[in-house]
Every structure is written in structure tokens, then in C-alpha cells.
Length: 397
Ligand SMILES: *[C@@H]1O[C@H](CO)[C@@H](O)[C@H](O)[C@H]1NC(C)=O
Ligand SMILES: *[C@@H]1O[C@H](CO)[C@@H](O)[C@H](O)[C@H]1NC(C)=O
Ligand SMILES: *[C@@H]1O[C@H](CO)[C@@H](O)[C@H](O)[C@H]1NC(C)=O
Ligand SMILES: *[C@@H]1O[C@H](CO)[C@@H](O)[C@H](O)[C@H]1NC(C)=O
Ligand SMILES: *[C@@H]1O[C@H](CO)[C@@H](O)[C@H](O)[C@H]1NC(C)=O
Ligand SMILES: *[C@@H]1O[C@H](CO)[C@@H](O)[C@H](O)[C@H]1NC(C)=O
Ligand SMILES: *[C@@H]1O[C@H](CO)[C@@H](O)[C@H](O)[C@H]1NC(C)=O
Image 1 (tube, helix red, strand yellow):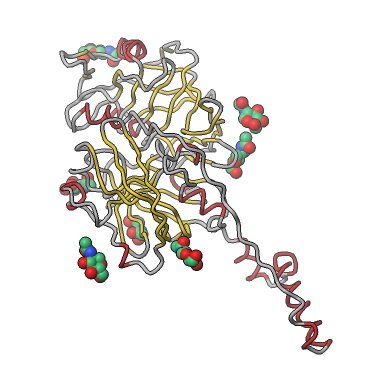
Image 2 (cartoon, rainbow, N blue to C red; image 1 turned 180 degrees about the vertical axis):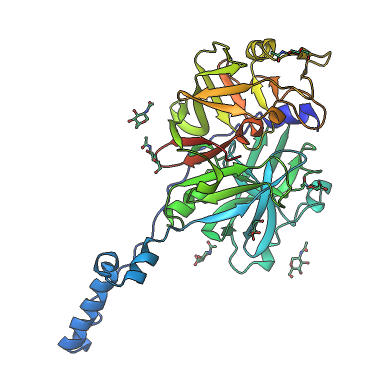
């Protein structure tokens, strides 16, 4: 894994367009057509059926029915760690299957189009419009930039299935050109953005946001569990519309998400401080963008230097990369919302070359850090798109 690929990836999407409003369908029943042609008895029956339908939730007495009405609509998706970046899982787009990276740091859904004949597209699954009966063309040009890598194409609409849940008529990007070598080697075909709607370059609500509006899920949040190894055959779980309580200990601690330029875009939290071997580093006013699409943690130079001063045996090599002893035993904890979250020692180093999982890199603001999977593997995290919170709890051991 090339550190520069990593850093480049982290430069995020640069186009910011307001999300289109969602219009919700309402069922209306026309009474005029029925009344003149039917007997009073039939009309009464019709009204009775109508009110039973309308007030179903209030009038149910049957216990089984009650239980099924209360059932939480949710779905879950197995995730696999990628050799390149992040964690990926399968989705179905208009009956065609794709492997997607679930990325907190962007808000667009795209897959390669059959019209793209570049190597990076041909080596992946491509969307064939004529094989989908539900596809609708919109033909709006779009472009999403991830720093050195970018994708361009046109948009279309189709149904998306994730973890058994549907986002109907989801607008997504059909990529005709991929610029940069970022995607060529990737195990995944496309990206499934899970940031806030206002971050979307396409300017459309995210699939999860659509599921909430379309009532495909009961709760407006999703939970993420990232496992360290793949011993059990899968290395993470994304739960949409519910929380997987088997994955953490104690209670979730809720933190308010911070805005950027007064808008909710990324999943940003205030970080109180970091402690290493019991010493507080005295960081002040630091913000962190949570990003499942990044493997490491990035801090501006000064903060990365402070951090490594406390890491036993760390050094900065000639390429400007921090290294730490491969078997480091330091006790690192991130303090967020007054709660300490311990980092497993294996997450202090990157597996491949024992470089530190914390590196220097600016993501645009002196106080902003980027918190990737090296932190996120240590917590169960819950992202609420309606009340703008992230719930955190230490993962079960
Ligand atoms: C996810 O993984 C679990 C545990 O390995 C397995 O039981 C389940 O069938 C998997 N689900 C899917 C959709 O592959
Ligand atoms: C797309 O599907 C159509 C209909 O089955 C087929 O004729 C065409 O060859 C496919 N295109 C590609 C690029 O596979
Ligand atoms: C495609 O458009 C038709 C006609 O407007 C509509 O009925 C259908 O729901 C649309 N399909 C999707 C997936 O948006
Ligand atoms: C999962 O583990 C096996 C055995 O250690 C390894 O061969 C395989 O490459 C791993 N898969 C991933 C996606 O890491
Ligand atoms: C979080 O936001 C809620 C609602 O806006 C507010 O009531 C609460 O005080 C905030 N909590 C903190 C710790 O700022
Ligand atoms: C730092 O590393 C040295 C050499 O490996 C070791 O002797 C010492 O105990 C370590 N200190 C801490 C605080 O872990
Ligand atoms: C946000 O929603 C979660 C889950 O429903 C709830 O536990 C939490 O208290 C809410 N927080 C605020 C600030 O409304």
C-alpha cells in the first residue's frame, strides 16, 4: 500500500451542490367515484375498510400483528477489508451486483458504465442499462473528484438493494471516465457514499437518506463494526436502520456532529485530547472527520509531531513518514465527549510496513484531523442523519 495513494485519496470531494428535495408520495382515495354507484351498505363498508387501513396502527388488537408492526425495519451487510482502502460489501443496482466501498467521507454512489472502455472500468463490473427493466435515464453530467483520482460520467436512476433494503429510484453516477490509477487495482467496483446529502457532487440524496424518507428503515441511523482480521469469514458489519448490540460493551455515548461552513457535510466530531501511557497530550480545539474510506489517521504536521514524541521508539524517516516499533506496547486512547477510547496496539502500526497509523497531512484546516479505520476498528459507531449525532462505544473483545 502506497502512502501517497492514501493521502491523495483523503483530499475528498471538492464539488458541493445542494441536495435535491425529496418528494414523498401520498396515497389518496377518491370517494366520488364510489358513492353514486354503490349501496349505502357498500359505502359504509368502504369507509370502514378505509379507516381500518388508515388507523391500522391504532386499531390492531391481535398480539402477533402488534409485534410485527413494531418490528424494526433494518438490514445488515457483511463487509470485507480492502487491500487498497476501506471496507467493501455487495449491493444490487437494477438487478446487477457490484462490490462497493462504504465511505463516510463522500456522498455519491457510482459504478462503472458499460460505455467505459478504460482498463480500470473493464477490469471491474460495469453497469449495462439494457439489462435493467427498472433503469431510467436522466443523462445529467456529473463529476466527483477525490484529489488526484476523479470520475466523470452521466447520472441515471434505478433501484438499489443493500443488506436487503431498497432505495427506490436512486440517482447514481454511471462512470464513463476514471482519472488516476486509484481504482484500477481495487477489489471494489465503485463507491457508496454515506456522508450528508449536501456533500453530494451529483446533488442527490444518498441511498441511506432515501431509505429513511421512503420508510425502508425504521430508524434514521446506521451502525458500523469493523473487525481486525477476517478469521470468521467477514471483517465487518454495516447495520442500516438499527444497532447491533452484540458488537459493543456498555452504552453508546452520543456526540453532536460539527458543521463545516454552517452545513452538515462530513461526520465531524470535537476531540478533547489524546492520552499516551497515561499522559495527556494537551491538544485543544481539535476536530476529527470520521472516514471509513481511509485506513490511517492524519493530523497536521505539528500535531503528528506531538503525538510521536510520546510514542516510544518512533521516528520520522527520510520520506517524511513516521515509523514505530512493529511490536509497540504503548497505551493510546482518544478522548471524545469526555470518554476515553483505547486503541488496540495492532492499530498503532500499519500491517504492511510498520509505519505509524498516525501520519502528518493537512486536510484543509489546522485543527482538523482525519480519523480512519485505525481508530474506527476500536469502537462501534452509530451515525444518525436526523439528529446529527455519532454514538460511540468500545467494541466487545
Ligand atoms: C454475513 O455473515 C454471517 C456470518 O458469517 C452469515 O451468517 C451471513 O449469512 C452473511 N450474510 C450475507 C448476506 O452474506
Ligand atoms: C448489454 O446487454 C445487452 C442486452 O443483453 C447486450 O446485447 C450487450 O452486449 C451488453 N453490453 C455489454 C457491453 O456487455
Ligand atoms: C422510471 O420511470 C417510471 C415512469 O416515470 C416510473 O414509474 C418508475 O418508478 C421509474 N423507475 C425508477 C427505478 O425510478
Ligand atoms: C483472509 O484471510 C485469508 C487467510 O489468512 C487470506 O488468505 C485472505 O487473503 C484474507 N482475505 C482478505 C480479504 O483479507
Ligand atoms: C447536542 O445537541 C443537542 C440538540 O441540539 C443539545 O440539546 C445538546 O446540548 C448538545 N450537546 C452538547 C454536548 O453540545
Ligand atoms: C520504551 O522502549 C524501551 C526499549 O524497548 C523499553 O525498555 C521501555 O520500557 C519502553 N518504555 C515504555 C514507557 O513503554
Ligand atoms: C439522537 O438519537 C439517538 C438514537 O435515537 C438518541 O439516543 C440520542 O439521545 C439522540 N440525541 C439527540 C441529541 O437528540
